[in-house]
Amino acid sequence: MIVLKNLTKIYRLRGQRKIVMDCINAVFPSNMSVALLGRNGAGKSTLLKMIAGTADVTSGEILSDGQISFPVGFAGSFHPDLTGAQNTRFVARIYGVDTESLSDYVQDFAELGSHFHLPIRSYSSGMRSRLAFGVSMGLKFDTYLIDEITAVGDAAFKHKSRAVFLDRMETSGSVFVSHSIGMLREMCQAGAVLENGKLHYFDDVNDAIECHSQNMNIG
Image 1: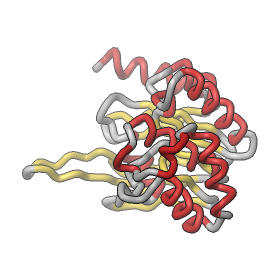
Image 2 (image 1 turned 90 degrees about the vertical axis):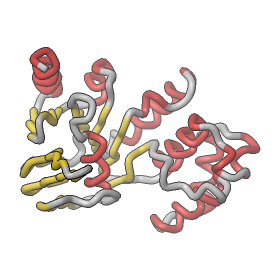
Image 3 (image 1 turned 120 degrees about the horizontal axis):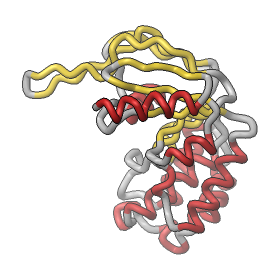
Image 4 (image 1 turned 180 degrees about the horizontal axis):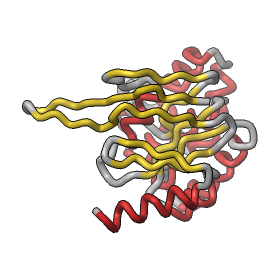
């Protein structure tokens, strides 16, 4: 379970003050996949990063009774001068899992071939994404934070990624961001809509999608 208590996020840029989240209170239940919807720039990715602990809140707090993933597919935290294998082993040590087991899983899953043993700085963006998704899925979390995994890899890799994600959802929950409404309907049970700094939670993902559609039409 993830609890947002009076969560506020404010950016200041060139003297301008932008409220991205305005005293939000919400509960994301355990073992539930929740679609997070909102227009571009609404703050969806920022919220995921704050839940993951990689971005600071301005005020309020985020509470959880389980282990939360870093944003799945996010490759920005890899060290560019280390190889894919070295980065994978480093992450394994951080999370206290067997380094060789995770390395073997990621090497097989990410389909990087010899590039797995080359520095990350030599990777294409797609290769980085495949590595990041493989590392994410190789670790067991209570809640996975998903940000546009549909953009990862070719059709075959997307199919494999979806299959392993659904397997993880048998015992875990997620907060799921995607521009694909069809994927949100397939993957999620509940939904939350971020609009003008406010978050509205819906027990039925279809109600969340309808609310988001109305916001887009009005805007």
